Image 1 (cartoon, rainbow, N blue to C red):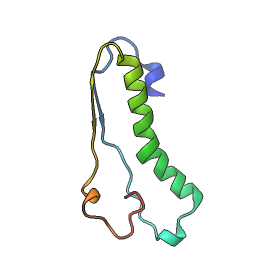
Image 2 (spheres, one colour):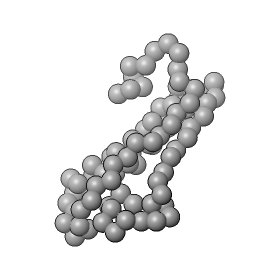
Image 3 (cartoon, helix red, strand yellow):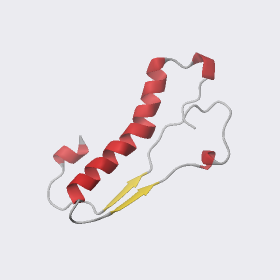
Image 4 (tube, rainbow, N blue to C red):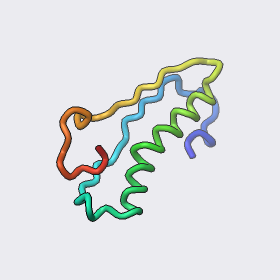
Length: 81
């Protein structure tokens, strides 16, 4: 895990900009496919933010979470959005 191995100067800005866009017919989505999508697109953001705040609690810092255009315009077969 990134936060367990970090030492010295801590980053003072966290930018969450990673995500996957798996395309699969909704009725063909299985548990593994769905879990992987959530792990990368949702859980990774949560854990990165939580650990960033833990490390910088007394120092302060900036967190930027970047989403996608699909918050407004969705793709028909994109499970992630």
